[in-house]
Image (cartoon, rainbow, N blue to C red; front, side, top):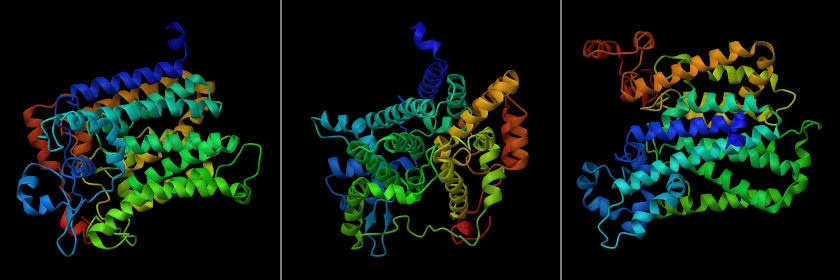
Length: 450
């Protein structure tokens, strides 16, 4: 045990994991039904396939009011009024090892797929993938030869000092912790593959890339981490990569096979292999909200996860050792543009810019580089500042839990008011309601500013 805690990085993994499990448990992860909002749709493939045995959702069409009132399935409808599951099956697949058990032991066949045991399974899956991702991140940063102390503080900073904490404790089951896990695996597998290509590594890369694209199509950008990988001692030449064309073929084939069931589902329901199941929801590339997305008080990335700035700063110090730097410098700006161009650029309810959590494994290298560099110069100041900001973020997560940091209506006044207080009286909460500003969803969905 002493040897275990002698490793500062492992100690930090244990701290982050323990705190996340404790916080999630205290917020009802194992006692309250967390299959709410988007998770209703993400989970819907499991009850549709294994309980109703009907992906066409004809049972929903026949008694839609019952399922809407009970918060099940949440489908959209095609132009000819056929119900279609809004989200892809990626998260259902990742939930499945944890949600199949209630079905297997349901001897009376009375479950509908949305009861508490399924919710507990999803909660356990979120924490499982998150904790596993911390160990994979540790292996990656160790392989890149960062110090144990820098790795430990990187894990503390990402796990407790950013909005990622909200998505492993409050918003259980949302895709962000799962994408964080998959991107972390992609980086580590890419590093392993580029040291020595192997068939099993190519197969695993194909699975990871396929799942990433399946969960969110814009995640295809992360494939650049593999294709633009640059070894420290070599100049980057993309042509060298294609010499291993058999491995590349296996990666692409495996990814395609992961996506194929989704294409068949869309074909089965709509007659088309590619279908926008987010009916009437679009990008507006002529009207991105980049400044609001990064620094606005409704959901600004740098406002609600300010420690991310240290990670981005640290990318400068990683320029000689970071094999993913080229990909990172492409992926982050492009994702900011894409996300800020989505009709609902604040992404509905959530804590901060939640769609950027997928980039945190890339930014982790920046954090480790930052800590490696500044621990030499100003170790005590950096540690004190990081711990202060981590505590500030934990407070922010708690205020979000209490709906004091509002899920979609924060303003500059509301942010300043909540930042300077710890305890909130009933009068404070009444005042906050007067300074929140609800976005106009009707205007936003047709591309207008709100």
